[in-house]
Image (cartoon, rainbow, N blue to C red):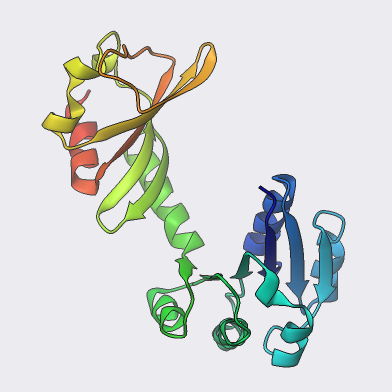
Length: 220
């Protein structure tokens, strides 16, 4: 279903987020105070405008309350990020998502009403650490406090075994929520215990962080 999004702040994070949402078929409004950044993105989103997000009247004129979500991706000047988030909340936006550059910044954004907080640099660093620590980890996504979702290339000890033989849920408390088959390309959601793991599969796992680490250490 097509949705309407506004992305305020068209630096690297905002630019890639806005263009990715547009490529997925959504209506995207890009907003930045810098004409150069607006010019660079205007052909890659539905609409791009030069506006100051710290100016309540300027934001009101853009009718952001009609959007499915407004993303505030201003990070370098914290005061502007905080004021923009406050303005958007005051306008009655349905869902406000804000980028934070530190834990303290994130706490302030939550207190003034941001519905979701992103920590792009922190999340990227955690993903990189996971992949450097264990090359079998192809992707890493924090799920909730203490839990994560990882994409894992199956270790040699997994190959040729069924999920019921591996018994990850009882051994580690880890649930296999999907399997990406590469040959041929296919996605198996919530696979049954009869599924036999192949070397060309990618396992999508959900579980406690400590258990995921334990699995990686003991599955060689």
